Length: 186
Length: 449
Ligand SMILES: Nc1ncnc2c1ncn2[C@@H]1O[C@H](COP(=O)(O)OP(=O)(O)OP(=O)(O)O)[C@@H](O)[C@H]1O
Ligand SMILES: [Mg+2]
Ligand SMILES: [Zn+2]
Ligand SMILES: [Zn+2]
Image (cartoon, rainbow over all chains, first blue to last red; front, side):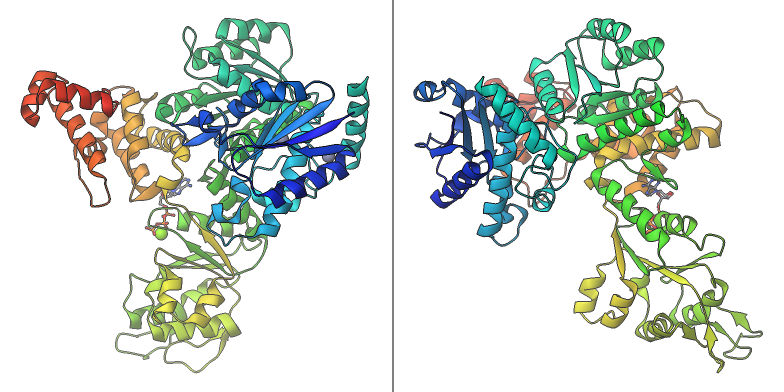
């Protein structure tokens, strides 16, 4: 039975996890379970950048002993962190995923209005978190970036772009998603 | 989405190759990554590529050499050189050798997106067989305004948009950031380009003269007014009036200006005839007009009238990635003017350019390059040709906002340099022993620069 697991890494606000889980169930039409959290990702800290390596977090998820048994079968796992993520070549990312793989991660850090010196907006944070969670999971189902700015697979390089896009897959991405889900099951 | 775009990544560091490939794959491109120039050339000979992303610093063949060899095999493949901040001279050299672009690692996601979109546009152009080499060279230029930084790209997009309209514009920015340049660009690309561009420096004239300068005067309006004189508003009719340093105008002139802006009508000094004028107003200031409004030094109503569209030009220190392109531009300009041939900058010279704070912004950079071109003895510009920056570098000025740690670090580094990194001598000069000095060098990761 297909399932998508949500893995809080460090302390993440429960309501956010629940909303994201609901959204995932709805959009991917499968079960979604929140599993117990891992400790904060201090192992992924990059002192030169003063940020956290999203790649190291993905590796940690995939190599974790207790998660190992869960990861068998047709499942995906989405780590949610609240630290600022980067990759060796990008100054920041909202998240990272294994293209056509099992694991993905998203960060709430830059989705918060506070990050940009604005007053907090919990509702907006939720909206953004949903979209980025779907986006990264979309990658694990083999979807690449879409040229439709309204599609959730559009590459967002700023929260402005995230706010412009919707929380759904465009027609062609939906079709691809369907096909890829089929072939994964086979 | 773009399965037909093939990109070859060349980088000796595995982690960079993987990271970049992953991102490009997510973007939907076909990607192959190799670790050195030799392998890259094999690939270029064997297959068709739409773009190459080549790291600059690699053991063996470096990025520029790869670029040269690639160009011998296929002149048309766009090659993007990836560099670190410290290596501007090489970026300039790469552009000269025909690199399509350079990007600084790590990339801002917006910047790499832009760079890639430009490749696609380029590729589409090639496909349609419209080979606008000249246009392509100008990809980071608009009417002589140069800028590839994200901030300047936004400014350029705005400039293009507002040029087509008739709206009143306020350009804000520190001295030397290109306010007048932008004003002229807007005029020249607007529907008014056939009309005159008239500039008035509001700071240069005393109040009484400024009024008659702007609005004109009748014969006998004041002592010395021996004949009727047309004002700038009349002269600029059907064109653009550029009010430079608008923050400096007096309250009285502010009222006059407000009237013209609201009614498009004015009268000459000492006259009664009401004149009509059709001008577009572009104002500029290096002052914080908003603050002046708050302090009631500038009329609020006038502020809103002139500030329909506002363009904020960033200081050069906030867009340092533009420095290589600007340097290249000014080198070309002043080499032609001075009939000299200069190939580029030594790495030390370019390090100085990148490190400097540029309080005088692009104008200062232009002056520095002009001077360097004039005094350069060789085909390469060296630190001696940049005396101001070299001197600045030597100076160490602790400021109250520096931490003790920073001050100590800088001070030790300076002492080491003045003793040519002789540890014994330096320790003696600093009044500490050799071991303490060695541990400080380690602690602060001090290196010869
Ligand atoms: N982005 C740019 N690209 C090319 N040249 C530039 C750019 N910005 C400024 N310059 C050059 O720098 C010099 C100063 O620009 P300009 O006179 O427009 O500055 P300004 O903002 O009006 O300064 P001030 O406030 O001191 O009058 C000019 O020679 C201009 O051509
Ligand atoms: Mg000026
Ligand atoms: Zn993505
Ligand atoms: Zn889509």
